[in-house]
Length: 265
Image (cartoon, rainbow, N blue to C red):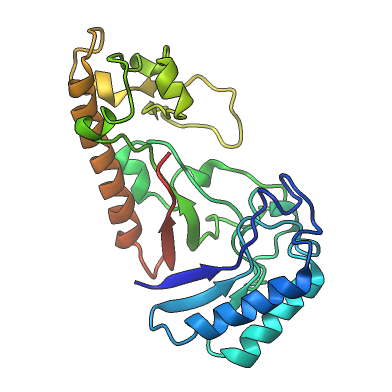
């Protein structure tokens, strides 16, 4: 296993999505901690590369220029054998993306985070291949060789579920109704978009939606008890995770250089 080691910044609180571009408040303390971290981890056999942070944007402001340059100098001085990449992903900022600049970001996007038709995982960049960016002209196929975040819904075992859920109810088909307790825990539905000839870059098309928890067993109108729902969900997510990795591994080193599994939704 190879490890991507990030420092302590994310677009969630470093200006782009929330917080401030000036954070952290004490840049020198931050860089001293970074120096200690590089000395601590530089000898680890699994360490592959260093990252400035998660989903940092824009490039010139996040991380702050003095921190970005400081990290580069620290890594060059104390390690020198591994690359430094400024951010995991520029997200939907394809308008400023230069595919020839390999130090700016691992990727321009990430995901998907929901279930997809198993066959989709064997297409190049599943689901993301439908996204059109302002300057994607000529970039066919979509040049995403490392996906820094991809994930699926995760449903616990029935025994585990009962440790923190008190209701006996379960989400309805297509998540048309969700028990309050599951909404509190940010329940993510299992619906799969099965639309044939799906259009690019639009949310306004007639979807053909399939809920495998109900539809796969052919009795999609009946009420499910929680134990049955749980083992069905466990089976569905097993298939999803299996095909996710089989799809990426089938094209490893031709389409892809790596994929990082993100937390389950």
